Length: 250
Ligand code: 6PG
Image (tube, rainbow, N blue to C red):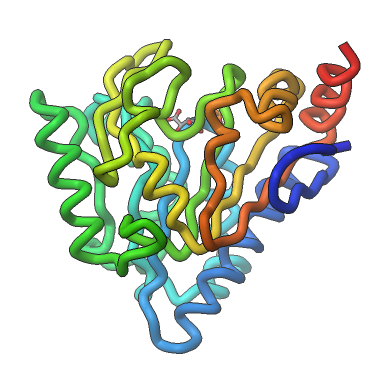
């Protein structure tokens, strides 16, 4: 049902099951670091799919399973929206997870994409990454885990088809542009995504079928996420997987 996707795809029945599976994956990767006293460096996805996972992790039954005080939280991308704006990826994570768990405020790295000089903000974010994370393959900062979503046009983070940021190979975060508002973005670049120790895509809904098909075919933007020395996981619900199969049969 998920033939051809790179890495290790898993199909589960529902969006709620995707949230649960992704939360379990994240906690497992966190424990590998925090159990030995380390700081878990993680980049969270934006959009709407992560909401259910954030809500789950914020429940007592789940939140007690993480050493949050040993987490350092970053964002895969951010929109040019103020932090209190519903369109902000920081706002999503803060409302549904971060304000409910004990991640230290100085270890939450919001991308201030609402500021006028996006390039300067991207440079500052890239410098903070280089300062706080160890270098990975190719010299990019190495996350312990990165969570990503998949757009119906095959984008991920704020790496959109046809945009110059797709070819950026000499910095770790850069200015991007979406094909829907808010248009102006800051995003991790492929060198950073591909230096990660583990990347997981969480994908739900039949509208993602064609994009999944294009990932499998290697033509989607998201197909370029291939960790050079790390795990690549896909968590799909049955609707997305079935739509992928239908797209493949067309
Ligand atoms: C964003 C995300 C983006 C998202 C996909 C999927 O800022 O919107 O980073 O890459 O993950 O567009 O979005 P949904 O989860 O809402 O389908």
